Length: 406
Image 1 (tube, rainbow, N blue to C red):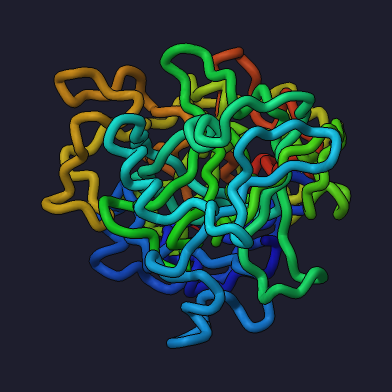
Image 2 (cartoon, one colour):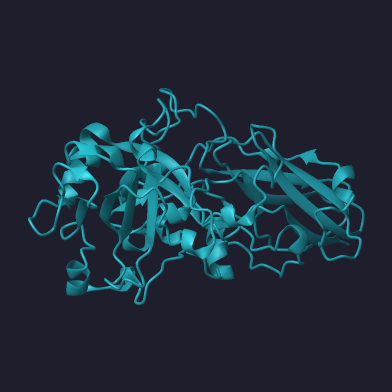
């Protein structure tokens, strides 16, 4: 999933491609946002997600008969659920004997077990969210129930279509307890078939993909077609083989938006906006630290004494929107979205696993060159990048924005 993201792609979601922490450099001037981007919709239209798909050719580039043969239409899609030798699986789902699950099977299960919730997708190795939407599907555990009794399984391996080339298969895995056991009121791992109220497009991993609410995007495999139950306790994730933490969950972290200017007029308030990824520990607040640029171009070592004397000030987090945007009819959420009360209001705000918009308003800033840093404080009291500064479990270094006041 990790590849360079163009400025045009980043502008779609309004998140800055700034270097962070000790490696920060001055940002290049950004293109002005379009009127639609300036409204900062909470949900990202499916077409506007930043795309980090893999494959040669890309699965979503297939057309006509090739698309049908690949099983990438709702009518041709099938899901196999099989087991390795040491696992007992009463009723496996196989293509060979026509017992594999159909798209219609998912829709039928969705009538009684459907799940809807807001989630932002973020790659483990890209320091910005890629977009967020309203995802809808069926808990994976309900699909496993259709297979009858299961015994001696410790882990699930799963992957989607990648041109039937073993070298291109993008795999992920989960412990069986992560799939079967969900605390009451919490989100399960689920198999998704809708995004923002519509069928998931190919570019977003449709017709069916896995969604793991608390995890980075490499767990939410696109174009899902095969699940293997295993007695193996080890993760077989493609990302694990590339020196990433295969069990990492979303981190709480703040990121800058692109702005149309890096120079602001003296005597006028300066508005700086951004987003915060709300990870598993939630989000308590967003803070900012403004200081004159000492001439280091934003570089600040982790052990620099300036961190200890920094004056962090509270930023303003946007309230829940009245119009959620995305592709929803009239921008209205369905009533049964996870995390919302019966009156249609969020049970907590900001919502976990989604993005919160924040605003810093600077007043009476004298002419000069400045550094602005932002960070999150999670509900456990940890300041970004703690408690997990290790970047192979998700990039969350404190970002720095350089600007001038004249």
